[in-house]
Image (cartoon, rainbow, N blue to C red; front, side):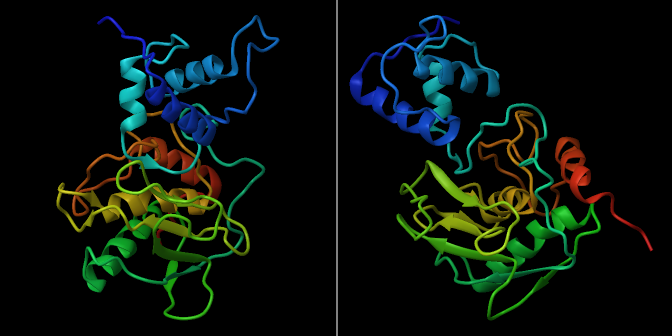
Length: 251
């Protein structure tokens, strides 16, 4: 179908923010040395390739539609099917500890705990990794709900947009997962965002995976609804996590 270019200035400002955040667009102005292609156009092409869109290098309606979709807050710079953060970024210990620091008012504490435990089990079911919950003190993976600016240089943006973000394995903030509490999280309903699905994706980052361009993968950056009781980790994600930690060992 015919693609409609976007020329409205207010609509152009959001894409610049999106490309800066997720595709490393820098503040350069004017054409670059590379054949007169502007940095914005180059990053648009990169984004369009990643999401399987028609690669035009211009802001069209299809590209803008993808930019509007709720998603993870981690950048999409590594393009390809499953990818890791590189340089063997992974946990060198097992089991790992996790702690739920606070809770969202959208769900009961039991529902949050169940969602988080199931989301971690998604990864434990295909690797030797094990997770132990702690109720106080530091943990390898600290799980929290926050709004707006919350002390990590990656402020949340209110309803829709970015749903959550996580940090790759390392001491301190590494492994931690932050959920945007301006979102509506659900236990199983599609009237909001299923916490289990968002958490399972973010824990992939906590364990060392970056985004995948495979639309069927859990590590694809855009949110998709899934039912906790029937969810099976897609093959792309299994290959990714097993490249870091190996296969699940049966006794």
